[in-house]
Image (cartoon, rainbow, N blue to C red; front, side, top):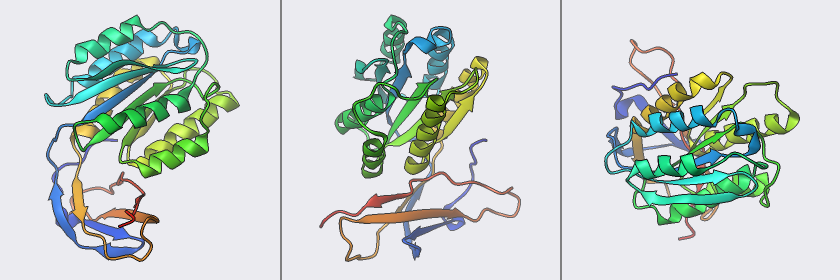
Length: 256
């Protein structure tokens, strides 16, 4: 539940398709990031939107001065409210203009945000998704979105708000967000008390700011263009407790 600092390259092992790979680069510095904030403004958020706005402010308190971010709100359909900017007050202004109403096009919103990342200035890219329900109004399918998530180098962090008994639709939404986070190396939180949002947003901001970036050159593989599975293992010093690693599950090898 917290960031672990103080590890070095000797504490990590990288496997690609179960084959160990030599680590050629290693860093843990706070580098600039391109961030997409996806904010649920469907009707069910009416009583929660004020706290959710505060949570986003808390998240941006952890930002690097060189970060850039954009805002997508979604109800019946997603809308790009604020394009890439380093003036996060503009993001907050966009949130205050959004009024909760309508259904939830969650999948379409993530789809739009991933494609918007093509215009990012930084190599590190992440999405932060805040929603209280499952999808009930998207054109794209869950399968199409998962395929896109595997093909792109964008981490996804998700906060699911659950302050009442969950319907099957909401359970499906929670599973979708959890899977997106797992596939892309991000984190997924479920909060049952709206007051927890600010603390969770701060945790995500700190996790994004404190990452180990490990590089390797993959061995020649005749399966160019195919999926390659990555596994990251950590062997911490004896003084550390048991640790859990969050990382991408793999990537598609280039054709050439």
